[in-house]
Image (cartoon, rainbow, N blue to C red):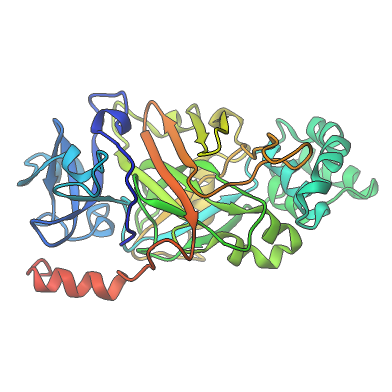
Length: 391
């Protein structure tokens, strides 16, 4: 588990506005002496270990609403699992709402992020070069890309035009071509939850958060719900070479999710995901403040299409998957000087929020200063076996 620094949070700060939302999550429970899948009901954290010992198995249940109807024994109020300013929660810790699932991400799913990826590629990871390249490319590419349906005849025409102009890029290929970019964001069990520290590689000097909606998908490819995510990204590493994507994305505590998975139901349909506004706020210890948002209405590939490109007849995930859907947000606000753009500093508090899904809050630290990830799949299985939770 990742050790938290003091960061005061309360249940009212992180829960969605919808009082009828069905919220599933995971906590580290001091009383149970381990991680538990939980249901939040009337402010109480209900233990679902007797229903299914892992979140992956829970999302496999066909009649999930029926399985949840009886609830479970209370582990206490949600506030007991949040740091309210005096260290760790009194009852335990809120974890990322996934466990055995693969943690995947879709890239370049918004026109704005396509432009920024092309800028990264041309700047070779140097933020000082980005400003002039951005002004050169934004007008040319922006007008050509917005509203395009990936893989369409019109997209093919635009591709031919850009190739002829010498402006084609591997990022544009996955942005408007037939095949989406889907990559491994993190290993199962490595994501951190709301209130935890998130990690930035200590050698990175140009990086940013990526506020996203994350799908919870079971092994049958069914989208069971959604949560919020922060796909922490190293723009300098990936900008130097696309082959450094793994190092740019998969680092200690670089994948955050939470606070809970909101299940799809009659009050929260899949179509609603494509209309959400995901807000981002960054508050620095240096007084820096950045606020912006990402509108899912501008996504170029629909969530169901991305889920189908992830899990299908050519690729299976027997434990299901969590899929980050991408973001249109790439911060460009200068922080350390004109033309230098944005990059994180130690101590930044990052808040990703949406009224329908709640608020995910994390504090930034270097990856090597965050507690090492040590509780993996083997540790989970041992813990569940010792607690008699495995059948």
